[in-house]
Length: 312
Image 1 (tube, rainbow, N blue to C red):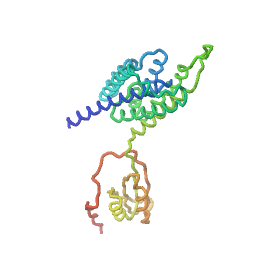
Image 2 (cartoon, rainbow, N blue to C red):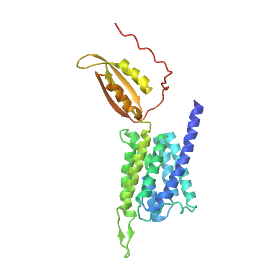
Image 3 (tube, rainbow, N blue to C red):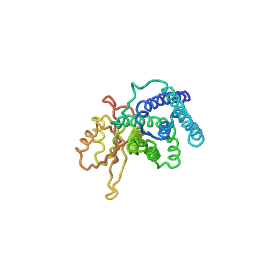
Image 4 (cartoon, rainbow, N blue to C red):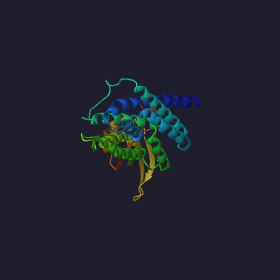
């Protein structure tokens, strides 16, 4: 057990290093040249670099090291350590990439069709956020603040807290990216604000989708007087088992069986076809965001247990 925990920890740390490299590349290739602020404290660092030329890598270290210390004592030690690894590696990669000529690979929209690098950067950023949080880590900055707030109030969704923080950053970007005209008068433009919001919204959407998981399914709850026949059809046609629960009608007080069965998306139509064969059957279906764990597959060679004898 201890070996498995150590192995998992090492894999998580290696994953944080890989995600940090991808995050740094995302920044250098799609964000830096296109004059918009991305999400979180990284957006603030981007605006500072745009105005003062102070490297994002150094700002990330200055901001995230204290935040990780705070997280270590106030949130979760494992979360804090992995976030620290991500933040330090990201900062180092940013500083290293600044010494490399990436002009051949950078997406410089030059103010035209800037939406494309924003969409790419937002999708990549959301992927990184989602994977990091599934491994009980984060990208630092506003993520740590949002994690702390959502821990204090679990009903608050992490990514929407983050989006609220980022909306404030978008407003500030309206003033930061103003350009002087030929008379030296600043011309304010809503484009950087819109680009920032698109990035934040897309990264929140993608991150939320990854947090929820991709093993979605559908749960059928069936109330019927033909439980044995329906169970047999589920077993034979869908290669699934099911759970049966004794139920009683609240109005008629008649005895019924309730069948609960989770199937994948491809089997919805087949399941409905099974139910159409039987009268005195009512069912409803719910979306399952993610299934956890697994059961032995039911095959044609699996012997189905005999039903219990009916009461006389």
